[in-house]
Length: 315
Image (cartoon, rainbow, N blue to C red; front, side, top):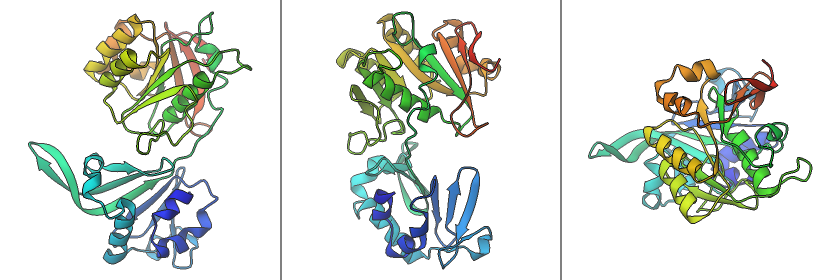
C-alpha cells in the first residue's frame, strides 16, 4: 500500500489512512461521485471523517480539481509518455498495483489511440498469496518430477492468476519439501497481472529462475520465450484465441510444459465454449485444475487428469 499512498493526493491520504493494514482490493474513484472501497465481495464508502459507511450519499466525493490532481500524480504529469499504456485502459505502478481508467476513447483507424477526459479511476491493490499452489503441485508433475501441461479453470475473480503466479514461483525456485528442482520458467504476462512488472521488472515474486515477457500477446510471447530463453515451463494467463492453439502445439512439440488458464466453471462449461474445442480435441492438456470462491479466491475444488478423472479434491 505504500506505493499507492505515494500517488494519492493529501486529502485522499488522510481519508484512507485507516485502511493501510486492511485487506483492501480496490479503490474506486469517480469524478464528482462517492469514493468507494472494495473488500472481497463487499463495497463500502468513506465519509469525511475517514469512517466506513454503507450509505453512498454520505461518501466523500472528489470534485474536478481534486480528481485532476490525483490523475496528474498517477501519471507523474507525463500523460503522453504513458500513452501506449493508457490506450490499454490501465497502467502498472511500482509495487505491481494496477490503475485502470475510463473516459472518452480517441480512435484512429478503428483502434483506441488513447483515452481523454478521464472520469473514473480504479486502483487495484496487488497482493501476493504464497503457498496456495503447494498442495496441488504433486498432481501437476510426471513420474520424473517434470511439470505437465495444465489448464486452470474458474469463474472471474476466483484466483486463477494468483494460482499461476504461485506455481511459477514454486517451479522456478524448486522445493525440497515437494521434491522438485528449480527450473527455468518463462512467463508471458500480456496484461501485467502475473508478475505485475514495472519498467520490465517483476514487482511480485515469481521465482529466481523466472523470465518475464511483459505486455506481449500470448501466442507471440510463447514462441519468443521458446526460442530465446530455453524454458522448461511456460506460464501465461487466459488462453482462447485461435492463434494460441498453434503456439501451444509448437511449445508442446518442443517438450516444454505450459500452465495457463481459462474462464469456465468446470469441464462441462469449458466444453460448451467453441473456442476451446481445438484444445480438447487435440488433448493438449494432461491436467485440469478447477477453482472457485467457495472458501475464498483460490479454493481448489478438484484436479482432473487429461480424461477428466478426478485425481484430487471433490468428485
